[in-house]
Image 1 (cartoon, helix red, strand yellow):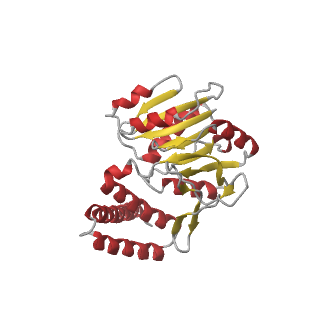
Image 2: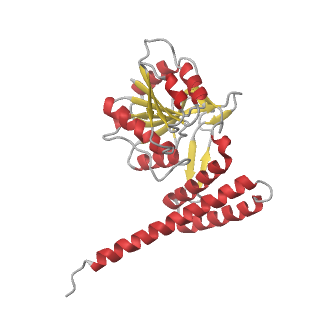
Image 3: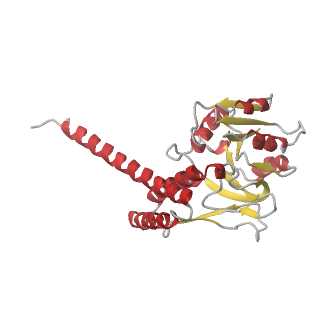
Length: 300
C-alpha cells in the first residue's frame, strides 16, 4: 500500500492537480492523506473521497509537525506502508506507482528515498543533497544525471518528494517539532542516517514541481522561517565558531538589503532575532533547572 501525504495551506487547486496526476487505474492500491494546515480553508474538503482523506489541524502546525500527524495516522493503520510525502505544488509523472512498488521490492534496505525533481519547464531542480560539516554547506548536488544505478546514497533529500519505507522503522518516524518550516527534511534525513538508516535518491521515478509557488506568496514569513531554521541547523550539525561566522554574515547581508529588498531584509533580521531569543530562553531555562536541582540537594 502506498500512502501519499500532503500538507495543505490554502492550496486546494494545487492539491487537486496533484491528485488528478495519480493513476485512475484501480489496480494500484493507494490512499491520499491530506493534513489541512489552514483549517479555515474548507474548500479542501471537496476533494474527500474513499481514497482521499482530509484531516484538519487545529491551527497552522508547520510542515514537519503536520507531517508527523499524518505519519501517525498512517502508521497506526498500516505500519508496513510506503509513505510518499509530496508538496502540494508537485505532481507525478505517468506510470510512477508501478515503478515505486517494484523499486522497494528490489531495494528494501532503503529507509528514506528522494526522487528526481524537475520544474514544469523540464529544468532539473533536485537530484541529491550533500552536507559538508566543515563549512556548513547544505547543498543540492546532481548525483543522478551521469549514473545508471537504481539509486545513489546521499546526505539528505528534499521534503518536496520524500518517500519513507515504514517497514524499516520500529516506531513512527518523526520530523523535529523545533522546525516550523525549512530544513526539517535535512534534519530528518541526518537524524535517521545517524541511527543507521539508508538515505538515497533515485531517477527511476520523479515529480514535477513549481518552486516556491506557495511560499512566495508570503516572502517575509518565508525568509524569517528559513533564516531561523538555517541557524538552528548549523547549531545542531556544525560548531559554535562556524555558527557565529555565518550569523554575522547573515546579519551584515540583511543590513545591506534593507534599502533594496526590505521584505527579504526584515525577514532575515526577524529570523535572526527569533533564533537568538530561542537560544536565550533555552539557556535561561537550563540555568533555572540547574539551580532548582542544586537547591534540592540536602546540606550536610
